[in-house]
Image (cartoon, rainbow, N blue to C red; front, side, top):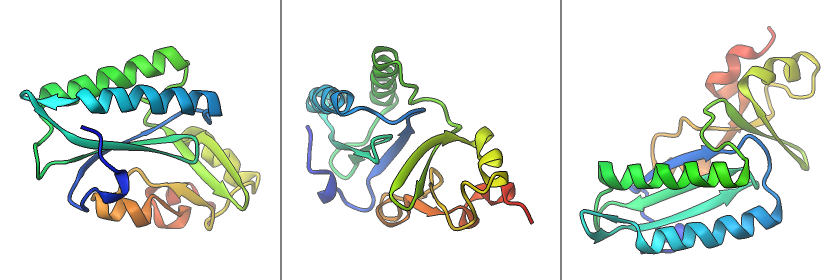
Length: 162
């Protein structure tokens, strides 16, 4: 059953999927419709999951489950992964590439990857203060406030030139 993302408790289980490119508004509309349908029928051991999703900066998909009602099981996680894979194939947008990152620079959002980050730093397009998506957040509560951090505060700081 789909619930309001903003009302999920801080203890909710979550998954972050970063696209390898920004989504168009048309893709976002379709994704919202398809994921809403998926969430309405998503179950674990025939029990509805209280789940939701959010698309952030037109590139980051967050799926969350309130496990105080019913926990996500191996089969339900497989079903979610299969849905993300189907969306990846249909949209020709890769949500499963763990090297994808989102950089926030003033009024601009750039979808890139960790392999390209070093050249962005070397050409001074980004710096230690540039905000980057943080896929290492440990809890849903932390996700709400630390989805984006300055590069210098993430594991990507190793790419910064001394």
